[in-house]
Length: 349
Image (cartoon, rainbow, N blue to C red; front, side):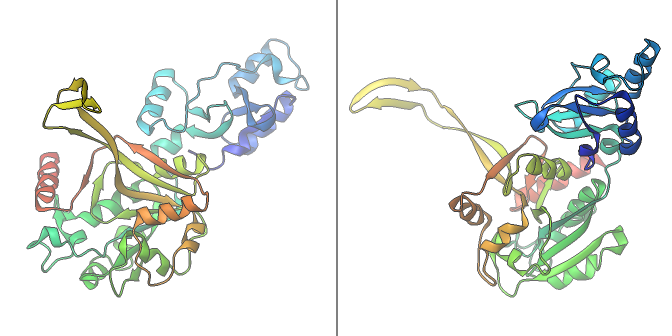
């Protein structure tokens, strides 16, 4: 979503002149008309204003007669692909984003979706793991540098994030970290900025965040360095912000089928049968968005995994949420996973 959507907001009492001025200043080509607390009344475009003037309205008239009271809207959860399809089908270049109470929480624009703008948010990538389950592949090569489709896994992550406007990266390194630093350097080869934090001992999937200096001053992304996915990092960040969350965890739905028929009982009585039931659950996808204040709950040089960090936020009554993923995703933690990743990318070449 565009970061400047609040510039498009106009009160229902505005005049046509005031909305024209707003359209000129926001340069969004749409005005969102709201009531108190951000409730979306409708929208206005330059075309609506021109049609009103042709009908005899004066520039000092109220906008109420020309408001589009039934605009197409979307929710924050709607994917980028779906939003683009709606825009194409309806031949529109702007789509308001509203919450369950129809209050405006954002605005999608065609240009922003097709060519994402530069995001100042930092992306931290955990690249210090020893990859013991991937041996012998990791005996002389850190896991994030293992090649998939002709380039290291970590390079895939950085390039995908860069395509969505992210340019500031911090890599947390430990095992064979010098090889990662030699390969990526300062990031200039990829036209991005790369800094490093160096773990002197394994610190878990969250502990290394205590080494960030300076600390981020806005929400930041965290990703494991062995996660290959088509997730849109920008949408994840926007989802986090629109829900006013302290910490967001991307999750994948996992299905597991029981290998046996299950007997349902009450005491010693049989009350039913469930033949090889399927259990649905959410699993941690290894990608997160955190508010800067989360770092206050970490101690320097303390081992901490990400679920423990989320638990600490919950203990402080902070809002922690999930971001349900449907995009392709693979955690390359074992040799079989590495083979699958390489097969997938070879079939795409």
